[in-house]
Structure formats: C-alpha cells, structure tokens
Image 1: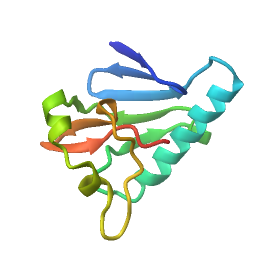
Image 2 (image 1 turned 45 degrees about the horizontal axis):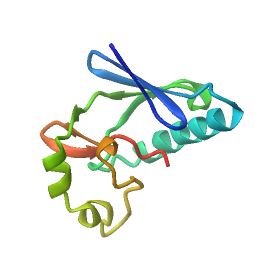
Image 3 (image 1 turned 180 degrees about the horizontal axis):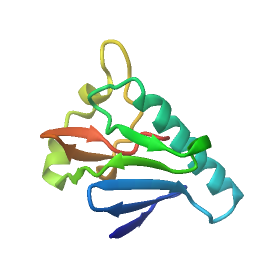
Length: 116
C-alpha cells in the first residue's frame, strides 16, 4: 500500500486500485477535493478512452475508486504531445500538464488526475 497526497486529495494505492478521498487539512481543501472527486466521477461517465475510469463512488463522491494505472516515466511524459492529447475533435480532456496527472492503463496513456 502506498499513500500519495495532493493539494486537495489523498490517494491510497493498494493492489490494482486507486482510492481517492478529499483532504482533511481544512474545510477549503476538503471541499476542493470533494469537487475534484465529483468532477472525475462525472467525466468518467462519458467513457472517453483518454481517462482512467472511475469504477465506483460513495454518495456525494466522498470516495471514488479507479483502476491503478502504472506510472509514466519522465521521458515518456516529455514525449507526450499534450495539446494533441487534450484537444479532441468532440471534447477537451480536463488534465494538467504534469507528470503525476498521467499513467499507463491497458497499454495506453490515460489521465489519472482530471478533477481540476
């Protein structure tokens, strides 16, 4: 098990799963984390192949669970055409241009943190 901390959420990486919950470091961080979880749950319902899907969530998206994507190497991230990844013909992927926002899932690069 591994625990990672973002600005508004805590991610528990265990086995094949990534479990995301709002940060408890102040009410603003908690609300931002809750909104990020909610956004990821909603965007995941579109089933865009560029997104790591949300498998399940608790009510109000207080906790969401995704498949655990493999990490991206720095060289792979640097060779990623971010603008092409983000700007699709029918939609835009809401992901930040940073290494930790991406991972490998089923042989392709996916956004793992798109709850901005």
